[in-house]
Structures are given as C-alpha cells and as structure tokens.
Image (cartoon, rainbow, N blue to C red; front, side):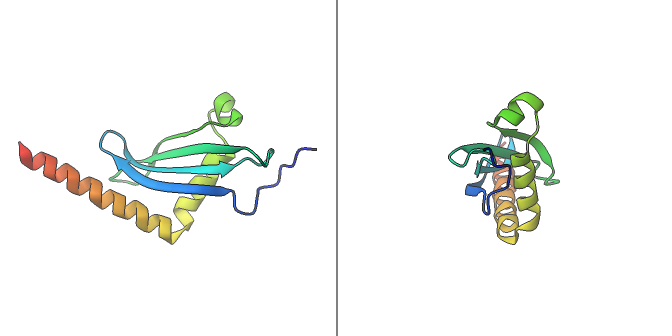
Length: 107
C-alpha cells in the first residue's frame, strides 16, 4: 500500500547560499510522500532584488513529467513561513549584493 500522507518533517537537509550567475539558492532534501526511503533533491533560485522565485527544480517523477511538484511547494511555504530561513536568505542576499558591489568597484 502506498501512503500519500506528508511525513511529519519531510525536510531532511536545507542549505541557503548564493552564486553570482543565478542568485540566492535554497536547496533541500525532502522525503517522498509515497516512498519513505526516497529523498528528493529540491532547489529554488530567488532573485536577489525581489526575492521572488526565478527557477525551481526537483528530481522527483512529478517534476520530471509535469514540471511541478509538492516538494517545490513545500520548500516555498517553508521559505515564507520560517523566520530562521528568512534570516539566512537575507544574509545570503546581503553577501551577494556586497560581492557585486565589490566587483563593480574594480573596474
């Protein structure tokens, strides 16, 4: 029997970082709803100025076939609701903006 219940804490690992080419990245390993032993790598890229989602991806079958899945929605909700993650995103944003200012001052 396949369970479609969301695990109590589906987030197994979460990282917030940035790259100059993409923006602020929030990535997580999220447990599958249907297979308890499967973890999916989910990634959201935020625009550093607006903090809106620019790109999102997941390695689950739902995303592969439909281009959207509940793992991405779960991560988006967590970003909007969790104060600690909001602080980490803001810290990454400040570091990215400072790095871009430093690069602009070189030339």
